[in-house]
Image 1 (cartoon, rainbow, N blue to C red):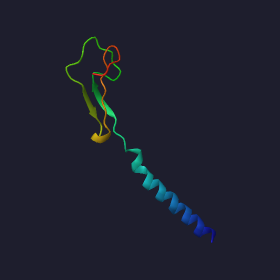
Image 2 (cartoon, one colour; image 1 turned 90 degrees about the vertical axis):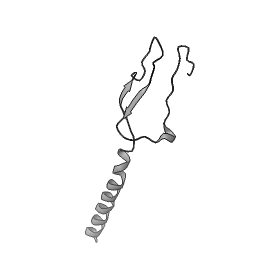
Image 3 (cartoon, rainbow, N blue to C red; image 1 turned 120 degrees about the vertical axis):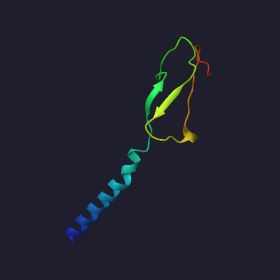
Image 4 (cartoon, rainbow, N blue to C red; image 1 turned 135 degrees about the vertical axis):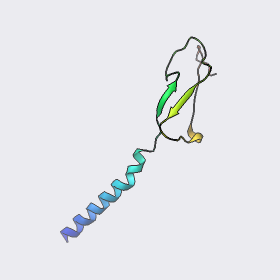
Length: 73
């Protein structure tokens, strides 16, 4: 009986570990940004470019450019 319980617990633990694994890699992160994040520029950039390490979901993507007085451009 004890062996059966340990086998069941081991199987459940393995199943949880396998099913939770993909969630760890569920986020994309910037690899390269021009201008760099948080940069303070003296003039507006001609272009803003961000390269991610994986595809991003456009529905949740947001980019905000803030002017010198905190105004959103």
